[in-house]
Amino acid sequence: QKHLFSFILCGPPGSGKTTLARIYANAMGADFFELSAVDSGKEDLKLILGEGRTVGKRRSGALAQVLPFADGSSTPRAKLVFVDGIHRFNKAQQDFLLPFVERGDITLIGATTENPSFEVIGALLSRARVFVLNELTEQDMEQIIKRTKLKVPKDARDWLVQLAQGDARQAITVLENTQKLYGTISLESLKETIQSKHLRYDKKGEEHYNT
Image 1 (cartoon, rainbow, N blue to C red):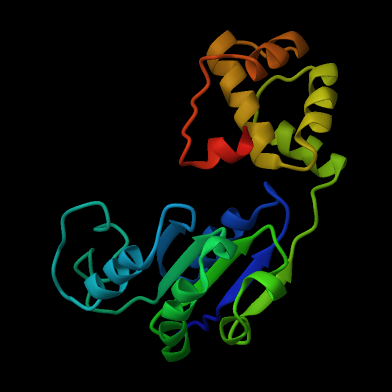
Image 2 (cartoon, rainbow, N blue to C red):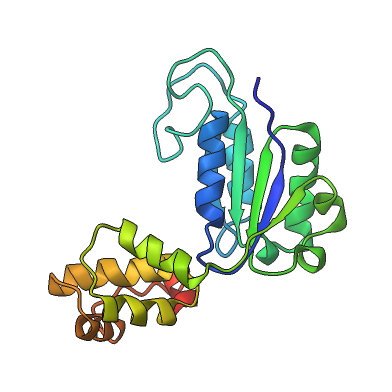
């Protein structure tokens, strides 16, 4: 069985924390559960842990594709729980996670933009490794923009790199929205997209914090 260990990814927005968690889960062959600490709590964790104890049955519903044995196999799969913004979990919520991490019932990956030494309880922190991600450089951002396969003129690319300030997710979102709204990408269309009233805004989701 492949080794799984809990860890916390600390780094600025858009530096790849969620992507790394998904890559790790896929490489380990684990069932992946993704939660946002902004709008999740104990009930969501109980659902993941409780449902996971019922085995050998095909399930319906949103969690079916990630729960153990959902594919009819007889081999248990590790459960990897990714908590985005783990610093937003209060002490009681973090305490609730602790025994499941200790017993190995779940492998926890936390993502935070804050210093985990101050925002994550000591008992949980001592059972996880901490990896610090640096802000993406301008060269990193240029490579990421090129890999989108979208045609981006140099002046538009340079402007977007400065705007995003190392946040790859923000840069990609602006590019996708510009392509969707205007069909072509230029410096002018990028600026218009930033001001567009047609962009999605969800006060409970990621767009709230981006805005």
